[in-house]
Image (tube, rainbow, N blue to C red; front, side):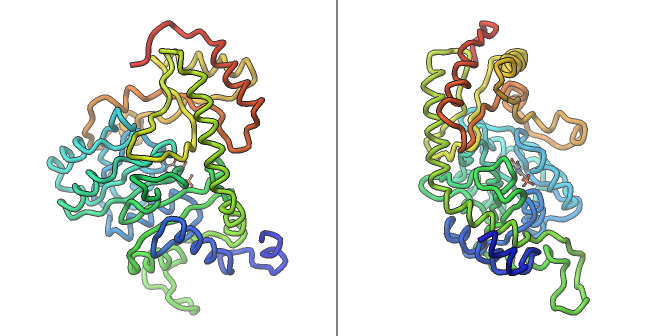
Length: 355
Ligand SMILES: Cc1ncc(COP(=O)(O)O)c(C=O)c1O
């Protein structure tokens, strides 16, 4: 596929593989439309534009997510209203979302993030969005292959998106995809992503972006997609192996696997009792030649968002700096998994328990 697209000189955004990749991801998620773009951040920004979010509008964003979710809001000229995550699934808390919607009349959309490969608890969030007549945007950046009550991640928002960044289960090097059943929104996204140029003439009808995915990236994505089931199965097997290996420890809490979801186990992560424990674990793993990393931190506490509106209860703050991601790539061999387990089990910790 990749060789073919280079041989036939279809390397930029014009070319058959982009559309083929879109059709394949639309089929996977059961959606009417898929639009392939340069990265997941652009996919969120375009989703917001299609949802009618503009300058000065407020958008609910979980406080515990990758910065891209909130950066995309800023790129659309809007303001993030940070809402805390739930202890059960580390995803947007519906009760707090309701509280935020009651108190902030400027909110024009909700972004719910599917963290670590499992879905947010979407049904209550969808009911709230319907009640307030605002769109629900699913940031499923790392959740391809997961599902919620049997419905695939990527199908759960009015607009949903995936990232195909290098660290994702399906990667195109860099890339993203917006998914929606709304033909008009999909048409608008396609248009705005290609410099808002209705024809081949150099006439433009609004400000646009150069956000279309290249054909080369799409060809890589198509090849990757063929292995999706195998990769998800492999990642879930790693997660089960780690769960079992750490089950005897009361200072390591594995990432949630909420009953509403079948997790695609994108990034196996554990919660430690304190930030000092998390740092000490990362250092101990590094000494053993294993790369572990402290994961997302609360965004509302960081410089770019220190004045942002917020509805919090402290959950995100308590995850901040205490969640550590362990190697869980679909290419991680059995021996490498054993080294991760050995490294972690050698680490003695501070003696505190996770909450
Ligand atoms: C939750 C979340 N949203 C958005 C993104 C942005 O995707 P990209 O890196 O493709 O721009 C990421 C990427 O890691 C992410 O984890």
